[in-house]
Length: 383
Image (tube, rainbow, N blue to C red; front, top):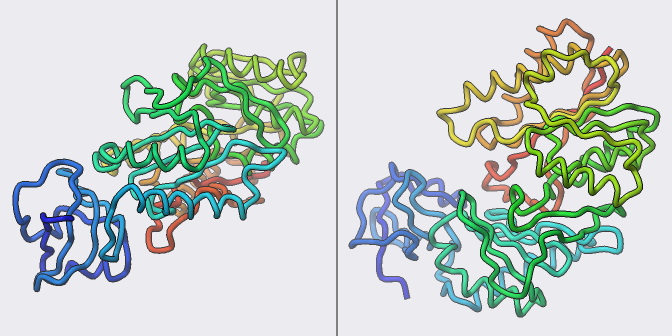
């Protein structure tokens, strides 16, 4: 099986003993031989004792651990891991008669570091976040076929084109979430086609929407807008810089019978928020893309979060509700909270916190890997 091994410096095995699934290059003492990107390697302590097995990378995060046991990592291993993930989703009542899109595999949260799989009805969409997982595609595809997913797509993380691995994929696929219907663009859309991780938050927006006019900033294909209109919102304005995303937002409004109460505005978010009166809106959603994907960008990201939240808090109608989010993994929950406090101070408004929000239960967090909790959100009442 695995021949190559990576030896850790003395004392640097502590993170593995705490079952953290990442090894950084600074912890490595030596490598047994030339190792290729994505190879399976054994991790050993300074005395040569086995610690774990995982995929190697030449970057700073040099190993993503797959098993802390002496497991054979083969097609059967992948099938068993995916079966376990599927059982968990079934226990969460996913899919259901109301929702047929959900996350089947959430990386480290499902013991499959570097792998994301989202389900849209009978379609499985794969994203690989490591060379090792990309090299394991045949095993992953085989496991998905055995689990009954006959239409399979590989969705690139970068700018490469999507690849259909099995079956056919239409330009528009239709999915169901909490009883609402959405058109999604799996092959060309952001992430895997839809922001599945906001399902619970969309449901909460729906419960706050009756009689309110919403501004949905960074709206993408209008998920929050449709949820708000379904909850009795008087109007929803979807704001995004992408014409293609707004086209889908308008389609989704029509699909659910809300066209008359929906408006799409193509604009950059920050100038719009800072140069327009917002007091006609008593419900605002700020769901920006990840402003920081690396620690080096964290300071600028914090300033961007502060800026958009200050504008929204300052401008929203008195008594309004603000849903605000960060999906930047390098911005932790406390850092995001402190940033919103700073924005509220600058806005000089009375602000109350009603809810702390996070990703839904089909995006489980490995208790030994707190980095897996990437989505943070707050529901604020502004006076």
